[in-house]
Length: 186
Image (cartoon, rainbow, N blue to C red):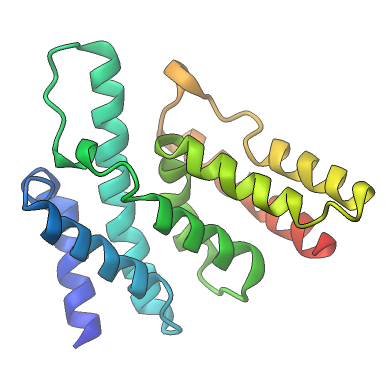
C-alpha cells in the first residue's frame, strides 16, 4: 500500500505540482508530513520515491521564489504561506545522509540542494546545532565548519542560484565528500 501511495505522490508532484500546491493548507501539510515519514522508511524504494516527490515540490518552490525575485507581480502559491513546511524534510534528509547508513544517498541528495536554497535559515540552524555539538572539541568543530563550507563550494547562491544539472551534480559530489568528512568527526 505504501509503495502505491508514494508512487502516486511522486507522479502527482512530477506532473501536477501547480495543482497540488493550491490544495487546502491542511492537506498540503499532511502530504508533506507523509513524504517526511516516507523518507524515513527503511525500504529504499519508498524513501527514494519520497525523495523524488519532494524534489519536484522543492524545485517548484525554488522556481516560485526565483520568479518572485524577477517579477514583483508573480502570485506565489500556498507554499509561501507555509514557511516551515520544508524545514522538517531538510533536517530529516541531512540527518539521514550524515548519520545513517543510506544506500540511496544519491536519491536523497537530489531534493537537498533545493531545500537548502529555499530554507536558508533552517539550514543555518542545523549547521549551528551540529557545530554546537562539538563545542568541547574546537579542532573537530573547526574541521566541521570547513566541511560545511565545502558542501556549498562552487554552488551559486543568492540571485545566481540555480538548479541546473551541473549545479546539482556538483552538489551531489560535494555532499559525498561532506558525508565522509563529517562521519570521521562525529
